[in-house]
Image (cartoon, rainbow over all chains, first blue to last red):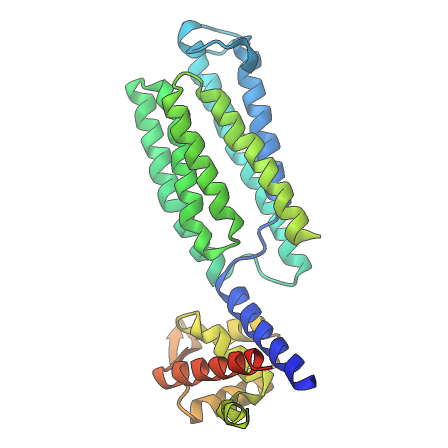
Length: 213
Length: 98
């Protein structure tokens, strides 16, 4: 029946308009892959700096190896340098691919929904960032990587209402990894590499094949 | 069957009006410009459909100045929300009734 087809089409049009106007869907899977690769490189840099590997089974490597210096830098400075570089590079790559996707779909990157996504994402994230700096100041280094994962997971879950559902599940995974890392304390860097590196790549690829192609 | 078809709202016969309603029911106060981008419509076309929906009090208008620029935003009214929901229910029933 022709009418039937019309009604189905009508409903799917309504649905797509609702989604498009309330959610930010230009998030690119490649953004995730890029951020994941950068995070993994960051983790590798730290492992190389400390002269260890994830497979050596060493715990508390950053305590064991203290005081320490390599390439003319102490661990504190080097860790901050790597973390800052990863943050800047991952954000830049993420923005680049999402901007490209938005442009292809003739959509703007700055919309009401992307602003809502951004602000809801940033609230837990900035709190987590400040919290981690406090931990750093107080010398609780072991708990920093797990905290980063936990707050990042919460940020993703909070922002996911305004974007693709996959982000919610990625958030759950990061949260779970963070809690697990709190239990297996001392292996923070390994969990950090899995959460920010491997999971970003896995989810990025999944989203890329699901939406971008 | 005929009963249900009668329940389909004639005012929502046009795709543009359906689009306007869809955007407005999930957002609070949407600017004309944003609507236009979302629906990929021309100024005149969009304005005439908005006027029709306004006439039935399905949507309300707010005009204000942001700096020196006038800004027109729209929001769905209670009547509009109800009418839209009934239209969707009727559509759904039609599809389940084959």
